Image (cartoon, rainbow, N blue to C red; front, side, top):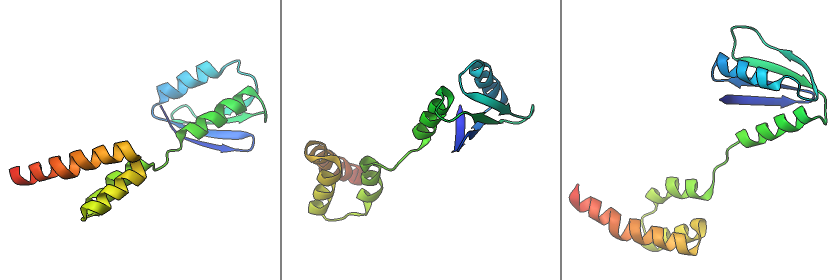
Amino acid sequence: MIEQLFLRKGEARIYFSTIEERNLFLKGMKGVEGVLEVDYKENTRTMLIKFKEGSFMHYLLENLASKRRSKLEGEDLHFYIQPFLKHPAVKLGFSTILLGWKVGLISFAVCSMFLVPYLKTKF
């Protein structure tokens, strides 16, 4: 698996999980249009690829780099902030704003009205 990909003008450095994955990527990359030079050391998991701007390899690496970025979404914010809210009306409003009307209402009803009180009485 590709762990990290750093893309600069005309070159990219890729970090792999294992050396075998690096070798597999290297083998599959042979004959791809736009590759100018590939630098790697035998016992490392990194590879430096120099490519021509606007080529297929540039397109491929650019799209790989954009897929690797992850961002915080509304569901993540809801999960992290919801336990700190105490008033039921604030919880309902927060859930509906972040998750939408239907999902927020269902999440509020199931979690805040039924699940949490049930767990508090059991434990």
